Length: 400
Ligand code: AMP
Ligand code: MG
Image 1 (cartoon, rainbow, N blue to C red):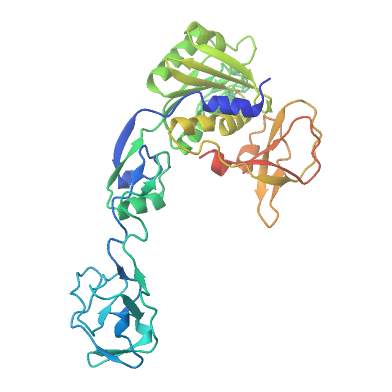
Image 2 (cartoon, rainbow, N blue to C red; image 1 turned 45 degrees about the vertical axis):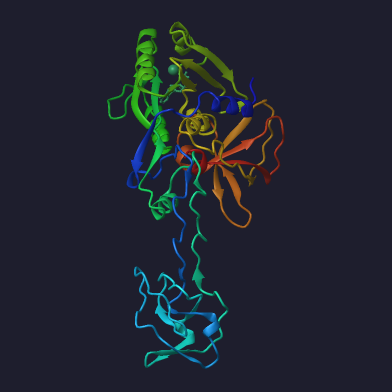
């Protein structure tokens, strides 16, 4: 059996970042992955300006109780000011450009204005209350690195630099294939021996939740022709194909022989993890194809911890493996089966955060899925006393 960490690392290497790129305007960049390193275009602020509503002066002109005549011009933000005449002060406001010759700002609370002159109540520190040209960014400096998922904060920064568009990776196209004679699509009538197909909708939602596109969700019966046709269609239309079910060693588990008949090399991994032991990786038509266990709870966990890093890699993202902090697990476990276990847990915040497992960890229990906030990873063959710190895989990080 393959160690979980090794399987995770190897899967993340199954493909590189997409080569397809597109250039999009600011309004369409939220959530997209930057494909180029961006440098600052401008010094920001572009010129020295006032950090206060107040008065600009030369510090050398200040003396206790001295009246300075005011320049006739009141310098509002957005105005290009006249130079400051010697021995004068100028009225200005937050964001107003500093007039040439002025080196200091005194805030209006420390000033008394009357009859076209101003007196200051406090001695200024020379140079105070000025935002200096370039103190925020300097033209040519690195601004945002390739591989960053652009959020409102990055978009604000680009806009402040006057950058109206950026090059991003194309959206990753994920194709999904569910398999099984027993499955019916939700919304259709169902016979006693049938169950509803939950994996198709679930995996599509997981992929789109990560910012991918899902152009095709197909279902194949457990026969070779149906599987082969579906795989061909998916490999044509998508960058990454996920199939679920049909990959163990049952008589109707035909995914492996079908992929082999298509010339794909498929390696079946028995990963030392529970739920989810059988996972397979193939390369077909130059594209990665991952086969997940059919059980929906297993497929959910395997997608989260094993497949999501590959999705991030192909999307061009920099952070492939999110953090897994240690959090106290509030249960005790005796572990003897030689597989790491991923428990569905709720995270209880507080000064000493805790993880509480769902009461029934059987991999058939669908109701545990929306209940849980994430997965707690338990080492194999190790007894876990109550309160043991374990690695926590937060869905908010791992399913993004
Ligand atoms: P398999 O690996 O195909 O033997 O599937 C393992 C278990 O998961 C079986 O009980 C299947 O009925 C169930 N299963 C497989 N695919 C799905 C699906 N798309 N939706 C719900 N259950 C599924
Ligand atoms: Mg099946």
